[in-house]
Structure formats: C-alpha cells, structure tokens
Amino acid sequence: MPSPDWFASQSTPLLIAGFLVCALVIGVVGVLLTRSAERFAEISGFGQAATGAVVLGAMTSLSGMATSFTAAAEGHPDLAVSNALGGIAAQTLFLVLGDIAYRRANLEYAAADEANLTQATLLIAMLALPVLAMTGPDLALGVEGVFVIHPVSPLLVAGYLMGLRVTAGSYRRPQWEPVEGESASDGERFETPKRGEITRLSAKLLAMGAVVGFMGFLLSRIAVALSEQTGMSENTVGSLFTAIATSLPELVTALAAIRRGALGLAVGDIMGGNAFDVLFVALSDGFYRDGSIYQAVGDRQVFLVCLTILMVGLLLLGLLRREKHGIANIGFESAMVLVAYVGGMALLVAG
Image (cartoon, rainbow, N blue to C red; front, side, top):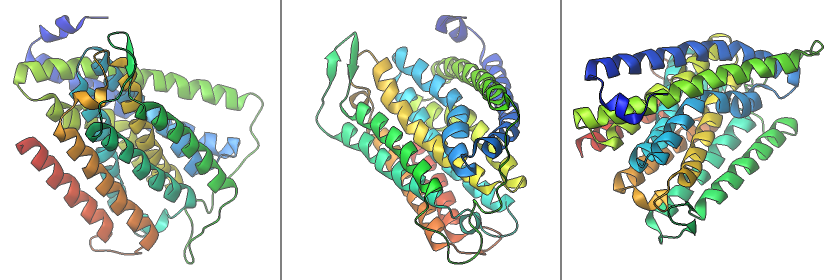
C-alpha cells in the first residue's frame, strides 16, 4: 500500500481522478448491496427497517469508517471528525432526494415506522454526547501517546448497542402504528431460506463491504493530499468531499430501495448508517494518539454536530406529523432539511 508521502507527491489532477474513481466504485457496489440486503430481510425475518439499520447501514458506512480511522491514526483529527459528522448530515439530506424520487406520497408519510422513529430519536441522543465532550472538561482515560480515550467514547458504543436492541424490539413488538395509510413495514415478504442461503448471502455482503471499506481507505489518503495541495482546510475536505463521497453507498442503496418499494429498508439504511457514523467518532478517539480527539477539534465541529441534530430533528418531526402531500412532491420538513444543510455548509465553508 502506498504511503501518505506517495499520495502527497502526486499531481492534483491525478488525485482528483483517483478520488472520482473511488467514489464511482463505492456507488456501483452500493447498488449491488441493495438487492442482497432486501433478500436478507426476506429470509432472515429481521424486516426491512431492522435490516436497513443494522446490516445495510453498517455495510454502507464502512468506507466512511475507514476514512475516519485512517485520518485519526495519522494525526488529522479535524478530518476524522468532520468526515463522520459531515457524513451524517449528507445522508440525512439524501432522504430529501428519496422524498423527491418517491412519487406516491411524501416519504415521511409513507415511511412512518416505529423502528425508524426509534432510530431517529436515539440518533439525536447519541449526537448530543460528542457536543458534551467537545465543550466539557478535558477528560481522558489511558496513557497519552499509547492509548487514550474520552469517557464519552465507551458511552457512545454502549448507546449504539442499546439502540440496536431497542430497534429490534420495536420491530418484533411494535407499540406504535400510523392511524391511516400503510406503515413502511406493511407488505413485506418473508420466505423460508434455502439450505445455506443465509450463510452465502452473509459472505457476499461482507465481501462487498470489504470493497467499500478499502475504497474509503484510499479516499482518506487522497483527501489529506488534496487538502495539503489546494490549501483547503481539513474541515472543508472532511465535511463536504469525503463525507459525501463515502456516503454514496447510502444514497445509491436508498434510492434503489425506494424504486423497489422497500421504504423501510431505505429509511432504515440512512438512520442506521447515521447511528453507525456517530460510532466513528468514538472509535476514532481510540486511534488518535495525542489525547482526546474531542478536545483536538475546533468550534466548527460543534457547529457541524449541532447542524446535524437540527436536520435529524426536522426529519423526526416529518415522520411524526406525516404530511401526505407537499409542494413539488416534497414535504415541508424535507424542504427545511435541505435549507438547513445548504445554509449550514455555506456558513461552514465561508467561515
């Protein structure tokens, strides 16, 4: 594997071309993941929302995970954190594109499902923890220069695991359902798997996930080199370029799932991927050797995570309010998510 110095020695056009190739591979593999994940939902009995949140969400997030981990290990905390948090904001924005693509009704109306509501609520709670770590006292556990983590990091891991359990429980024993219209889980098909089919399908998902993860590793190296050559800050590179590029699997799989009518899978993929991305920050804290990664980043990261909380909150409001039809096939909450993202990113880059 080429060293970081090798990437830094390449020309800017070549780096940009490599960036685009990696992004293209991530997008293509993301399409293939959709069919496999939908089949897994049918034969495993997990349901689309849970499969989207746990299986597809984790698989499509591997590229972003590789980017954040590599950046943290190589001493680029701003790139590591902005990539993770920027990815959450970008993926939440992708649901607006899904809302536009789904012609029958607003996506928030059609995708109302207890598992998705649970994921969105837990995501807001998980996002609040990094803000507390960034703005609170400088705490650290371990030995500096060897292994140091902030106490919030294990709390985030525990919160994610609890979220998986709560999401699975909300699917098996739902306590809430829409009073009119269909739930995202209505009409799902469940089949008895053929002998060995789950094992083969799981291996296939893992293989595609490994390809996506490797492309993310290359993207992180290219992003650092581009940041150094162009003079762009790591915050800009992470929150925009690598965040969007490594989130392409979520966009591709979500749109593909919506076209197939698998709304629970689409929204579960985005919400589950977002929760997994918060986990990047916690795990990147362990890869960063110079203290707590939360204290190594600046105010822009606080701004970015607060922007993300706002966007997820607006999405949750849309899932609860369930406006059936909006203007130009987009709900009011989706429009507000779009405005928040564009305005927030413009302020972040201009600042």
